[in-house]
Amino acid sequence: QVQLVESGGGLVQPGGSLRLSCAASGFTFRNYAMRWYRQAPGKERELVAHITSAGGITSYADSVKGRFTISRDNAKNTVYLEMNSLKPEDTAVYYCYAVRGLLDYWGQGTQVTVSS
Image (cartoon, rainbow, N blue to C red):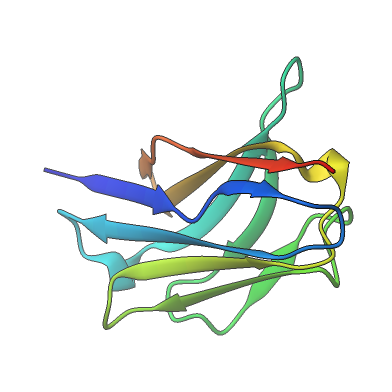
């Protein structure tokens, strides 16, 4: 049974930091590229960050570049999203996503709220 379980979301003040984790099981994690998406209320889901299967290449949305860092630990079957200098506009549900060719899996999401 494939599972992607996100954790680490919560309420944080503007300028603060959070670290999201996504624990994977039920598939060969190291063979999959991983992404973080987010969806704010009333908006479309958007790609935030991407990391290749071996972790050698990362890419980011312009809106988070320089503030967010995606990483992965293939020994722990986990992908991370380090978020710094958070802004109110970063408020959204954050989703973990695994992809390999035509195979893909989604996590259930974790809420991040940036507010004073």
